[in-house]
Image 1: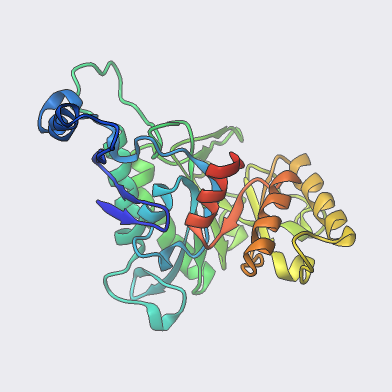
Image 2: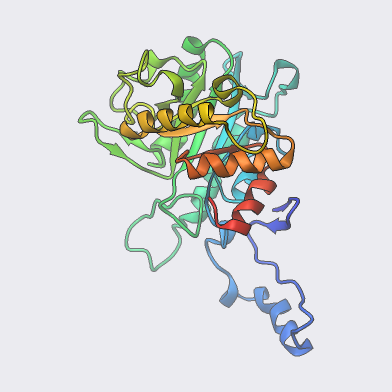
Length: 317
């Protein structure tokens, strides 16, 4: 599978070797023919060399190839907006964008399962036990955060989300909380957001899904929320801080950010702010850097290539 980005063209599942002017013709011939035999076939090559980055692929379903585009740059978090119609979860930003083919199962559940199966081959005679590595070959312990943004009625829709997760759950791929309130991280961590009903998440044990709590009320209305319920909390950047003048938060905004980081981290909860400034680029990049330097755990991005490029240049994420 080839995914074109603003930085490069990534071939998932193979390793393409570009000709270099410093390579002799004889050596280039060996390189060109290397993958015709089994010696240079790497069993878990789908995400080979991709470094995980603490970025969230906002509105991931808008991308040319949802999920795959995100992991191709190393994003550890993706998001799907789901709408329930006639028992099927359709994916899209609004009703007019929904189609029969673009479903939660086809765009997320099945591709994630396929990736996990590729990263955990079972046909090797060298295996002494099954593996449960995550989607990234460079860090099998890194979980993929799958945000499920419920757009239709939460009480009605969430049970269908839980049912859709069964193939991942039955394979042991989902992070869980057991009846003793022990959290176990796994390849995928599912977080319900949007209209997800808290009363269908918080009291359930054992449980293999979590809740996206609102950052501003973690010490108020949602003061009883812990990381066992909400490993990541989120809020609207613009509504929370207001407009940004220049390339960084002002003193009042910065004080609010630091207070919210302190409250969340005291609970063991990570933070994500969405709807950050996207333009001008200097403001966008400045806010990304400031959020990260102030302890925000997951950076919400619409421009995957821009965020990945900043990461590669500064080793920032």
